[in-house]
Length: 454
Image (cartoon, rainbow, N blue to C red; front, side, top):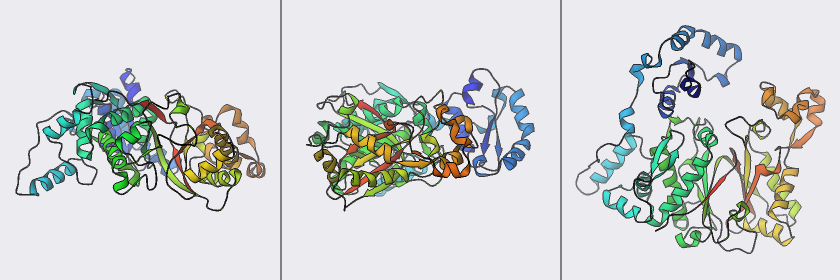
């Protein structure tokens, strides 16, 4: 709606109760802080269409006012905390012993700047030390960070890195991770603001993995000392999304339940392995390049198989993990919209070393593994009917016939869960035992090279 309003066409947003703060924050982020809106009591996707229509009808007077009055005359009293969105003075805390540290953490959490865990104080000295990890100037802009379109300068990112407990050498990795999110465009904005438990999963590849001492083996996703670097990198990415990208919970992050993955979610493939080429090499990078890949992931499924020793047996188990992806079958077949050319969701399959070795030793490439998984991850036409009957225009044109099947035909018609194999991406890391993992993703991943290292 904001895009249409900025083109000079009067609009009024319809916000569900509980989304008012998010509506104001979104309007500010897209340059229309006084854009008109009305509030209805229900989330319209959770009630019958008749109830939604009645709720909207009750707001018709407000809708008419919004369409006929200049935007600057509407909701002036709701400009919100815009003063907190511009640089302010340095914060000072004093006290005996640990008191100042506790006051700092309490104040930052109250302001919404923390993630709930204790923060490292981003003192001038610590931030300056962090800036020594890059050749870039402090005021250089990395990009405009979604969802709140924050100006991501080197120094702002360094502050988040300092708060998370990073080292100066970690800073360029964060630059690459944030650039990957920026490359996703509207797709990143969609999953960052979603009511789903979408979280950024960051994966590092190349020589920098060993240089930074990242864990690529057992318990790679933490917790614990073995994954300290992974943890602080993932945490810094989250803090930057919050404090630079304005991705605050209940304000531009409307997650219904939440997810612990949002605190920190960072892994790495081994720089040297006798298995397949690295994930970044499959993207056209050289083995000697250091890269960061980010994907928006919503669900995690254990794909455990300790009994099969054939490729088909192992991959059938993994395919079962992909099939259990929640209520998102429709997005795997939906028509891309103008702002999202890739469209739909997918899966990032993390094959543990034991499972990857079964495939590699049998002569299977990653592409062969992907194609097998695609062919054996099945859904029924009945499931697609259930997803698309309310919105048939979203179904990809070659598959419109699915809606014409009788209930019996639909129940007996089996299709791949995705419209093409490329929706499945494959990485490999972790420790011993046959426990792979499937991440259900919101759009494809993006990979960016790590540069500007000091």
